[in-house]
Length: 144
Figure (tube, rainbow, N blue to C red):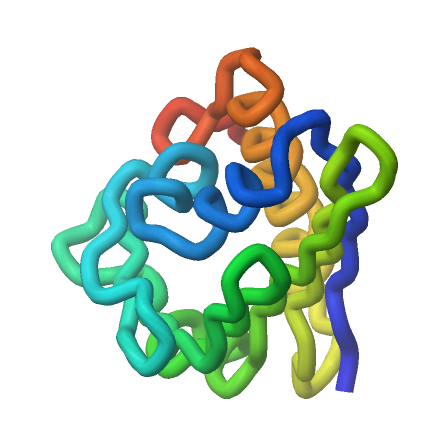
């Protein structure tokens, strides 16, 4: 199994970073504008990228306030099915560190490389928005 991993330091309060990854409204501010569903532990979130059907649906496995959010992909690209997306956050000095993992890819196919670049981009979108700059969620994102 293979993982995508990113570490981002954000000059924002821990609680703000947690809300950005743990709530529909938060995720809509940096990943994709259209998010539906229940972001509470045990809920399901649906993420839309311009199609009438969701591009991905995540089961919220864990939402531990100001520490960790875990999603399990239950619908989406074949390569994403049964993978886990983890957001671990912690304070570090006057910043908050976000450790991101998209875990348990069956194999490191080319699409994984693409997703690694896109996750990195969107995590920097999250950072920008929380630091007072312009976040660029889909469809305002840079296409590459």
